[in-house]
Image (cartoon, rainbow, N blue to C red; front, side, top):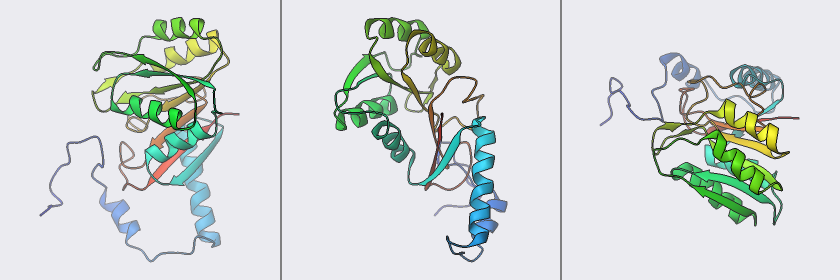
Length: 208
């Protein structure tokens, strides 16, 4: 039986503060009410601060994978080239999602446990100048590696017009992530990791 004194030493779900639990114990309100609309608006604005973006942020009922799917399905058409460096389970998930929508996926298989080098991204973009999307996982929780997302974003901007899609599900709120400054077009997060709230919500920031 789980004891509230137990400490979850996993990436997520993470322990939830008593303050959050108290708020969740309050009666359900109508999702069409003015109060709910105000709370949602406030949450979106706070998420913009965490993402460090002036762009749109959407809070989605679903998992982080649901937002990964949304990011790919709304940016990729059948036959589009998608560059996906693969260095763990969750970067492989980007491959699977992109293929399910008929994308021409360029898989760059790396040794698990090794971080993605920006110069490798540069080389692949020069070899494939018609890439439409570059999909990267920031913190690959299956291996524990953390990628240099600022430097990768700089390379993408210098070498192509590709969209930069970034999974920050297990890092947003726990690392220095600046969506606008790093040139990230779509950043995907989840409620149950560093944000330390219950599972069930995902967030996605979208550039102009």
